[in-house]
Length: 265
Image (cartoon, rainbow, N blue to C red):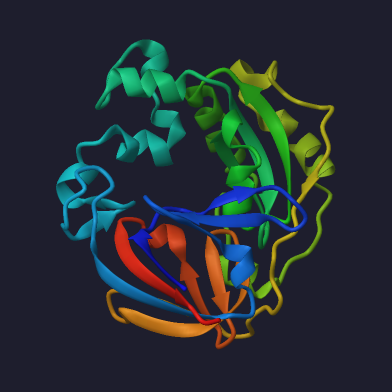
């Protein structure tokens, strides 16, 4: 079977295990059904997620010009504490910024390779945890806007990590942690403005990923350097495809790249 389309991050459903889908303009792939099959990936061209043109992708699926123009790539995306819509101040597009920033946000703990703190919109729970390859996660606070979530994350980062070791995550070098205890221990560091939104009643969410075989050594597939690759799919975790030879492909890193995907019968 042959598929073709522009890559965007895989869509997911929280089941046991997680179900993954690659969605193209005219088709989609239920990626779980490709496990143990030989897959061929070929890079064909670029397609900027904003302008749609065949222009070299700079970051996050956008060409250089659009990356510095579209609100979806503004600094407050990666640094929620820079959000200003609650002050009625525009960054790039106030209407978009109000739509995204002025809605409930969650500050959470997730354990992918180690326990880390993070921020996501409430509507993105548990999608955000799945995308990070977290096998367990728990909410800390639910605040009414992105700014409050951002300053809470900044405060908690002084006491707990905010990054995932993707290599350990993909090798499944993980330990189960008591996230309830860690959440409660962090309560004292929550900023006063956000403390009333502390959640003390929830439990961990546990996530199982569809992986048949974890790699011992990793090598990342770079479509710029290796525009054609073929291998047997052995697992899906986070936004990564894991192949039998230890090659891993981070789908999200290659958003905006048009590919052909062939599946051997």
